[in-house]
Length: 207
Image 1: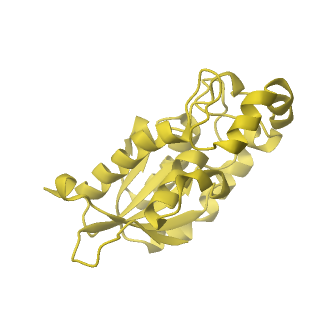
Image 2: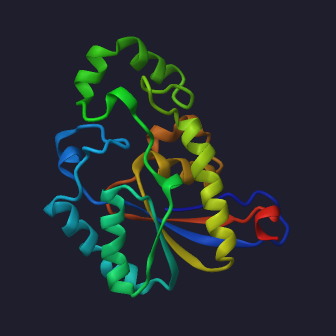
Image 3: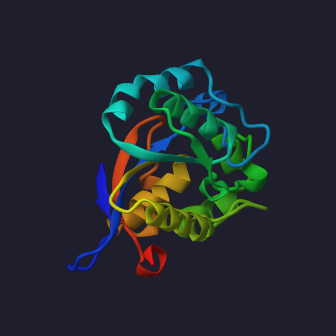
């Protein structure tokens, strides 16, 4: 998947951001919503295998840096890539998954049944609706997009690997491609797959 947030037809600075969602966890397998829960598990054996399965692809790309969410499942995935490439992992808390508040650790059907009004509102206004005590996708966008801007500005013209989470990466994919952020839930990437976006560096970030 290739996307770009470049909208003007003038020379601009950009970076190639390669986005990878963490590998599978037991909560992924069970359908539990993880968010930023401190109880969310790290990678299971399938998740570790998923990360190792794309190492050949990762090695073919000339990455100058690896950035990762500091949540364990993302950090563990990033470390698999880092060990293969001989690069350090820079942890960036702004790349964390959306805070799902009271929904963290719960199953989809339980959330839908216990929070019918919130779930209905989520369908009507996906970008602004948040779980009780959680974040909305718009609030996630307000942290992950500036983080991507800063990362790209540090590596103009280079390829950078970013390891993060479903909603956080979906926002970057939508933003880079000019897709309305209301469509964020339709662009959640698969576990341990690479997605390339061409990220234009804002002039103030590149100065």
